[in-house]
Length: 117
Image 1: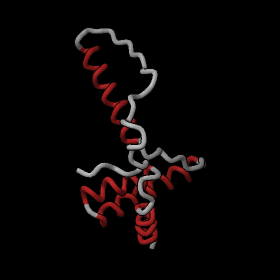
Image 2 (image 1 turned 135 degrees about the horizontal axis):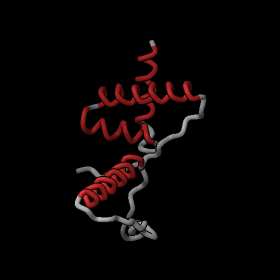
Image 3 (image 1 turned 180 degrees about the vertical axis):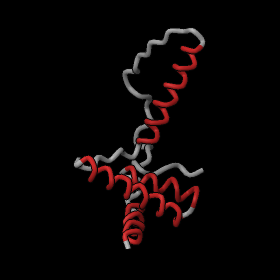
Image 4 (image 1 turned 45 degrees about the vertical axis):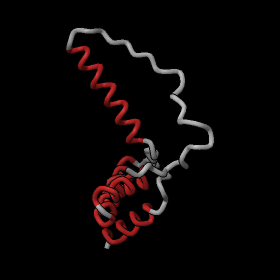
């Protein structure tokens, strides 16, 4: 019974078009694995999030639709710093002032819509 409700919830999250972490996860997985498997995976993510919310007695905090991009960039930076340190270099990082522009004004895609390949 619970699994049916979670999968139904995952289906409704999939119709949110990338406005939060779960919707973007659903969109990414649907492209790779298909609708059914994406819904089951998102249902699992909902269940895990609910477990930790109840265990820690904290409100739910969405990771955001850009979490995978941020995570990948941070992990990539850590890997490169570690490589340089293993080679005997001392690394000091300066964060850039502003991210590069997305392109000509008015030509950006709405948030949550990924480019199809």
